[in-house]
Image (cartoon, rainbow, N blue to C red; front, side, top):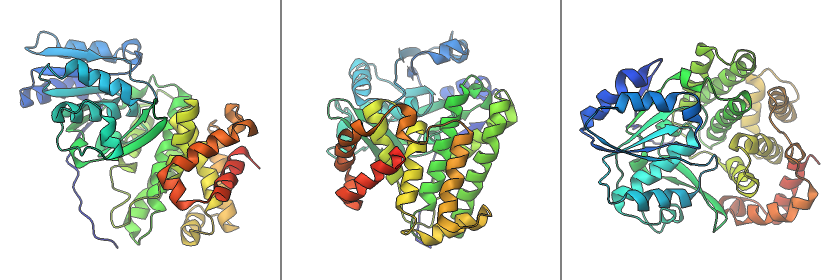
Length: 382
């Protein structure tokens, strides 16, 4: 087992009505007066969450600033715009209401405001270290990425045509509110994409090198929990207990629970998915349901013990191939894409995809040109 430091500073308040019960109390405890509310394209106004937040904050002695319009695949250009617009406002607290894209963006907004960084992309390229961040409260509305309890953020740069992640202990959310009822309005396809993301996070931690049996057991339990919940949620999308289970699974899949005692996870499938979402603006979960089976087929010989463990724990015969088929069958069952053709992409996109894959530092380091071509063929279904 590898040495590790177990420290997660994010406070989680989980359950029904936790926002109405605790949001203002927690804001008041910080004595925050200038608050920046960040959210997406307007779904929180349609489902009533925005109105609830406004009712909680009305008639309080605060200055509330708003930014709406964070994209599903968030871009650094939006972050820089928000920072430029609010850097003279003496913001005390960033309040993010949304899913992973909103919270990731808010993490970087909070860091850029605290460090007076005008171009947040410098955090992602390593030109600037994140040395500080404003307090960040997150109100989660989509169960998927786990960003509500981790030190990670992913953004795209449309000018540079890159999608990169950054890790810093400074960008853990201060506090995250997890009310499963806030996810009732998430459409089933998006809910299924979130479940794919949860499974991918658990698998990528599992495929890290190192012997940490309890961490692997956590990862396996999260995968099994997610697979059990998905078809039930398709039938009963308003079931609070099911929504609660998937929300809790998402948080634990990427809050380091599955990684302690191992080397940093294998995130190659996420790199492949980032390329697809960067080029074609598809949902993150949809990119992963295409990328992960292809990655598994490429790596069955590289991780024999890992595949054997999965085969034994899912009671599968025929080893490696059976494991891949098992996950593909599950993805097909829940209606997410498995091949590039499922999102209307074919051989004509080969050079564009290969060119972008080869520019990813992680993939370029670990795969030859021939191997990347094979990877594309596997995503295509050949």
